[in-house]
Length: 177
Image (cartoon, rainbow, N blue to C red; front, side):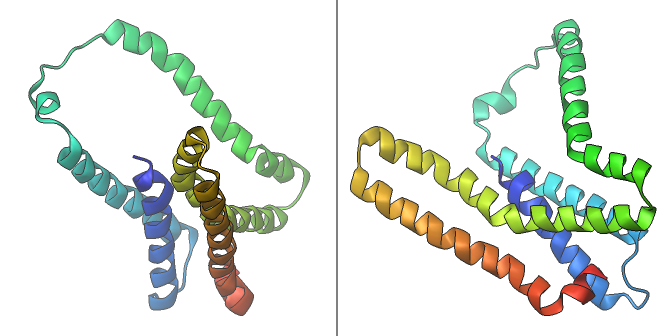
């Protein structure tokens, strides 16, 4: 269920950025990057809708909609405030740095924090995929398979982070430029 948001959208966005930076003669600029982000979100929406349609039981497709508009609206405000605070929390360092420093420093800091998030992506993906299996093996008391699973997760983590880091080690100036 988390595949479209956790894996697909960042992967499509990264691929589109790579293609546009290699194929466009003028190079990459913020407008193109925002367009690529919107395109990646649209592709993700289509894939998520297709996945939902394929997995939705027939009873859910034919069920009559239940509208509880007042209750939904009452719950929407706290959820919107929570999401707003999450977004603010994720960008407060950039906003604070923008007040205290120049836009060039903010841009470099933003690129560095984004690269840090990108490099952590394999760890996040493995966590999403492996956590339920690890929990199940632990609950079953299957220490042998749990140990083997954790070993593979550790190897996959190192390989994943290395693979994501390698382009920055080889062509970091060009990519970040």
